[in-house]
Amino acid sequence: MLSKLFVPDTVNYMIAGYLVVVVMIIGYISNLILRWRKVTQRVEVLRKEQK
Amino acid sequence: MTKKPLMLLILDGLSGIMVLVAAGLVFFYAPVEVMMGMVQKVFYFHVATAWVGMLGFMVAAIAGILYLRKGTQLWDITGYAAVEISVIFFLTAIILGSIWARPIWNTWWTWEPRLTTAAIVELIYAAYLLLRKGVDDPERRARFSAIYAIFGFFSVPITFISIRLLRTIHPIVIGNAEAAASGGFNMDSPMKLTFFFSLAAFSVFFADLLWHRVRLGKLQGEVEQLRIDS
Image 1 (tube, rainbow over the protein chains, first blue to last red):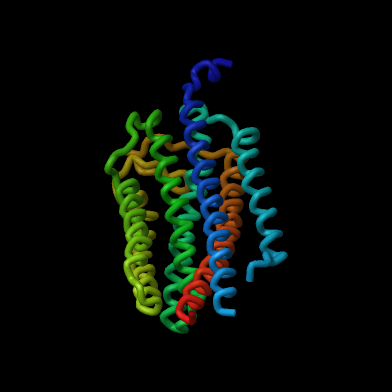
Image 2: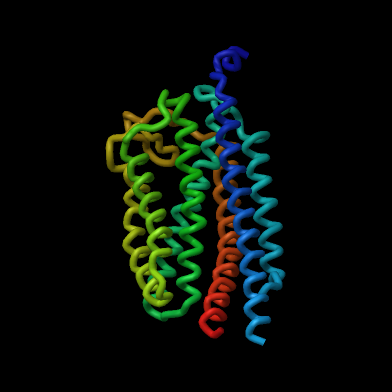
């Protein structure tokens, strides 16, 4: 009980930390998906041009 | 080429579940550290992301050696993919460390050995990504990247051992801490389980991302080849 009273309130820093993790991971995965779509379209166009 | 292999689908699901379980353990299972409060929970993903960063740099160095020995394009793609992913994760680890340091050390940043060497590693590999874009000839680019990744990797173990060899305020959670270290703590069993599970979850996640990035690299190589042919 007493220890709970003296635990420093650092919850905002924890939220900020995990927000960074989420943003970085989702950002990178979205970037991969966008690049994949772009390159796939490019391959299809180039294949058609070759035919 | 564009059809996703079944194993990759399984790995997608497994890595997603493992990362979510790791987050669950962090928030609902691992106890709150009394001296630091909730911010200590940042530690689990801070170490896991730093680990993935270092793992990727090691993969890039091994891929570099294999490329120089065999000359296979796949090793160049793998090395590039590993560095790209690791730069993201290592930057995440640095930012998480900085967020943790603010309430614990009362500063966002200090030029002590671990932080300084980590910043140098990040810059070395960010330069790798930039310099790669500056070389047009694919073969020269691959050779240059392989050699750079091998030599660049020397900075990684230096970062790892810096807090064990030099006087630093950075805590060592596993092993004996330096007397000047600030913000260290002893892990109890739930903390250890959460810590090691997070490491495993991020390792699987790294493998999953690497596979995806290598597939993208192969497809980009195909575009380059089609352009040359047309």
